[in-house]
Length: 133
Image 1 (spheres, rainbow, N blue to C red):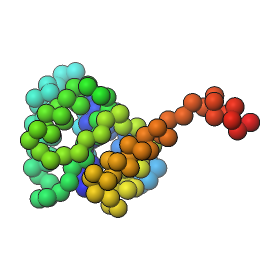
Image 2: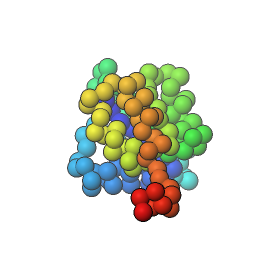
Image 3: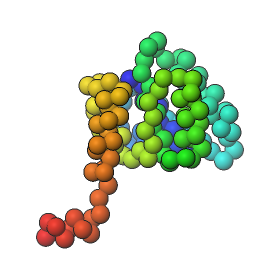
Image 4: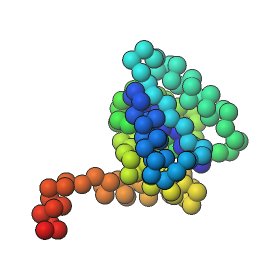
């Protein structure tokens, strides 16, 4: 499964770099950022080109940073023409989990697993400390 991370600015690249610091170099994952001088049309073309240059019958999981943001909307527009999976609101814990599970689960199963884990990927530390102390 190919993972394509798409975000505003350099968040996607930073997410990938941070994950690789923790779990090592990752294959078959790319990051794209949308910058103020870029158009959404150009971003869509780059993402389509990335998919066309990938192996036949490969599954694609797109990860975007913000629900209804421009990168999200570009990926949604691709979903009309391509059979892709898409999770939005990505963060480092979920991204690492995806990297660790993507060879074990197919797209639909992986998405379901990640959605179950999403709530546990953030914590209210003040409340946590009250519980453990």
